[in-house]
Length: 114
Image 1 (cartoon, helix red, strand yellow):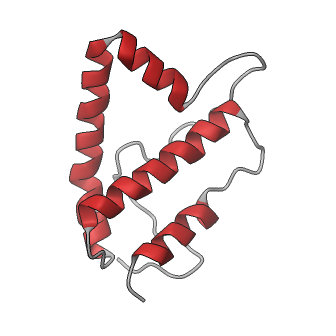
Image 2: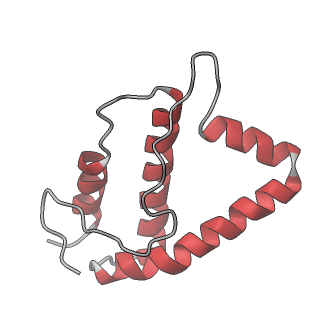
């Protein structure tokens, strides 16, 4: 897979590929804080979230390694944290022109060899 500067690679078959566009209605809470609170109140949810993260790592760590990462597990966690934060912000404060490509590209350029 080739990562062209300014263009993120297409990731066919990726878990959660093409997720539905989400937004919150006024007065609704959402995002990371809500999920963390729910997982603390419901241990079974925490377990499910952990399983989901492991499934993503099974797919994502080799992808990050294939891009030339010196530390694929750590870099994948950083990427996942960034994406999680970007989507949490979008859920809480929906923007019509939401485009995470610049932030993700900047992180990858900082992590990967040139």
